[in-house]
Image (tube, rainbow, N blue to C red; front, top):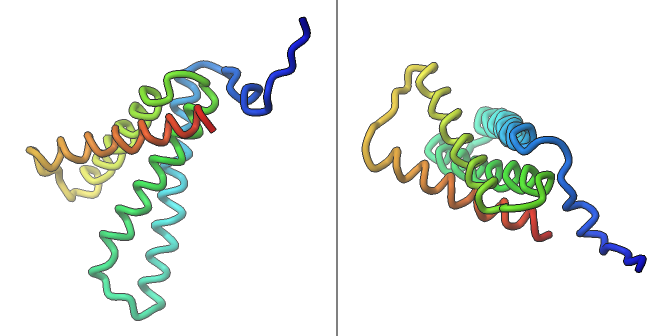
Length: 134
C-alpha cells in the first residue's frame, strides 16, 4: 500500500520542537518588523509624507509581521495552527510592549492593552490557520 502524499502534506511534518519553532516564528516577525520600520523611517524622512501616517503604517507592518511569523511557525509545527499562531501573536505584542518600556514610552494599562493582546492573538491565529492549511 504505497500511497504518495500530496505536496502540501509533505511540508506539514513537524520539524524540530514546538517551542523552537514558536521562537523562530516570533524572531522572524520581529526581524520583519525591524526591517519594514526602518524602510518606513527612511520613506518618511526622504518624502513629503506627513508623520501622522506613521502609526498607521506601523500597525500595518505589525499585522503583516504577526501573520507571517505565525504562519511560518504553524507550518513548521504542522498542527493546531490557531493555537500556535495565537501564541506567536501574543508573544510578538508582549515583546513590542517590552521594547516600548525600554524606550520609556510606557504602557497604558487598561482596555487598550487587552485590545492589543486580543488582536495579536486573533491575527496570529488567522496566520497559524493559514500556515497549517496552505
